[in-house]
Length: 464
Ligand SMILES: Nc1ncnc2c1ncn2[C@@H]1O[C@H](COP(=O)(O)OP(=O)(O)OP(=O)(O)O)[C@@H](O)[C@H]1O
Ligand SMILES: [Mg+2]
Image 1: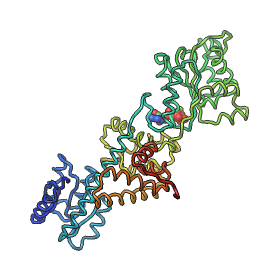
Image 2 (image 1 turned 135 degrees about the vertical axis):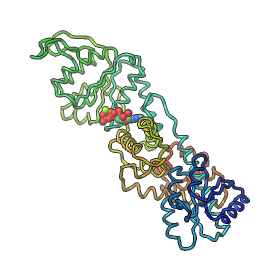
Image 3 (image 1 turned 120 degrees about the vertical axis):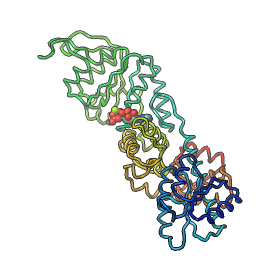
Image 4 (image 1 turned 180 degrees about the vertical axis):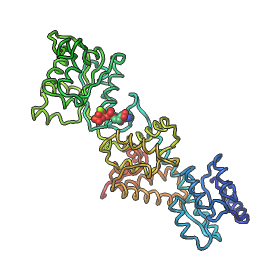
């Protein structure tokens, strides 16, 4: 049972289709022009539309494009006269599900409509499965549901509770090191005191020393007055030393002294000053290698390594990708006052398959651009600017999986549970039994696919 709109300028066809489809149990409304239909679409959304190619005013193809702009979920079937097959093919490229030739074969029409309904139900169900994934966890702005990110949450809450412990955060660029550092501070008893950050690669040695530890009056020619350093300002709070791998050996020993003895000296000063701060450091460099090259102090390395977390690259946590992407869509909707409703499933798949060398920062930038430039309701391929050759093959695999499922569903009248089951089976098959890949194909987590395999008692062994 579906809500079907019929758009045809021929009143006989309208009333025939109306009566026939109503007999089949559908709710039917008819329109004689594209303009009338569009007015109606502002108020209500049908499941399926039958559109005649030749209409007075705006023609069938134009109407199809406008309908798809309103909602990608509406299934469109094109009605063609003899001789417009090539236009019908063009319509399929624009997103029509199928076409039917005049004069109608009513049995064929029933089958086509039934298939369109099934496709729509499956799309809705997939959208629901994606939603189910979107459980957000605490810790302010850190978003994710992957095992890897859960491990990060656990780490943050543990070290937040021991406010003196020194923390080291490792990870590629853009994986969220600074975000995690702030989350540790904000969840600790130090949260109402300063969180100070310094990027060690942004200053040369002498400047960095003065920034960190301050100076006494007369320390250099233009140092007229005593100046407090940032370490001192972070007293009772947290001190975030970003890119600590880039710090000189001389400064490393001064930082070690802050960690071990909670004291430091200002530049040009002799007095030891006490400070109570928690050092949180971060690096994207290989500290072990720097240590073996004598560019990083081994004693400092061991001190920093007491509580260490490695943030995983984004490409290794596929299930977080769609979650983060959708999160950024709403962030930028708000920022740019746009109203993008989501991301097309095929585009999500492309996002999952991409390598993301710039990690979450890169994803954020890609979505920012897409929200700004997207003209339709959902983010489409055109507004996403990433390229990856492996992606094309995977997406077409996924299409095949879905197409064959729609066929089964339409023909057998099987339940959604069974659809889900065979969706999972087919994904597993096309991923040759690899659960991670199958989960990626479906855009759901590996845990979820495992849970469902258990629920449906699916056993799939590659080559077995
Ligand atoms: N799990 C996450 N949830 C939400 N936003 C995230 C997440 N991880 C990173 N981000 C966002 O991605 C961007 C990059 O994060 P951040 O600056 O913390 O990375 P970084 O590891 O410090 O990068 P770099 O090494 O280049 O300094 C930020 O805008 C941050 O808010
Ligand atoms: Mg950073």
